[in-house]
Length: 502
Image (cartoon, rainbow, N blue to C red; front, side, top):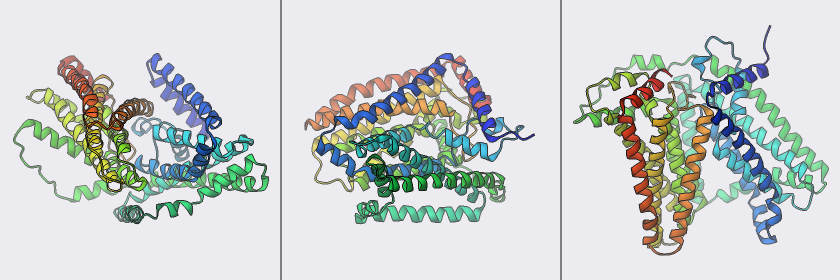
């Protein structure tokens, strides 16, 4: 007797819930859900607080907000290799989990992404703005249909890419398409035709349909909503089939690697340099981390350049980019060693070198992402930066980088997780842990960026430096405390056991 996909999905979520051994974590997750619902209600009622000028501006940018969500809905599952997994696949080998269950599980776990939640809050606000003075319920239905349709289509596209990348020819095709899209985006930003493309986007039709529902234009609202529902059904059907097709396709990656000669690494002058080189290789060897690093190196800077972010606003950018870079592997940095953690821990060298190597590689990754985003964003910033702008951007980059590194190393020492990082959808931590870490990093770096932005707006070049200095000192003390904890053999044994065996 076959079990339906929804029954399997409910069983997997029940298993994941029972795997959370701490009652405090369970209560915290429930409180977070309640808080998000309250925040959505609060945002929905925020339209009444705007005056006519602010309301007109908000309505004007509504198509851009809906288009931004559409881009995110496509890119997010691509970077996750098809979507998040409820339970790691190596723990479900003996169970007949359907491809449809895996596809639906990725859809349900989509909200466990802070950027996705922020985009949803923006769409709720825009829906409240464009339906002000009318019945917002019908507009909300259209917005929900739009979110569901784009999310399902994005997941279906991601599984198509996963299937294509199982063969060498498919990887070439995906690389060509991705490179062409990147070149087109750079040209659009360079030539300044982005606004024209936004004006021609179909999201204007969606916004008009939402407005029609609030002002009793039943026909236009019904046609728009019906079209979005049809796209949702199409996305679900395509997603189920592409997921099954991708999971059935054998991969030729192992065959190609076996056919190539093994390249020996060069000799390093010290044990620390050897460990740093090994950690760098571990990042580029893992498909999920390699893909995430490439996305972090390209998208934030491209978005900042396309938006022509002012110099003072660039002070906030490093915090957002640094938080995303920390989530790449920083919150569970010792998982880079995997099953080899036991071997590394038994080598006759100072055990603190392993933690130092992770710290160096994490700092390189976060700082490089911040620098690339800041430089790309500054290319199209208008005017000439003041001395306060320059010191503000530099202080924000350094402070946010060290803040993320210190918090990530503290999380790696206190809350390690097992992660193989072999498959394209492997994550460095369970979905719930990733969501909580994303919120912690984004909130702390966001508040720091806003504070440094306010100091920069004062016009005094030394104000951002004065504000960032105590933050740097506190972060350094936190990082030193985490490295000292790793030096404790009992703590180190717990971490090594967790990342190597679970």
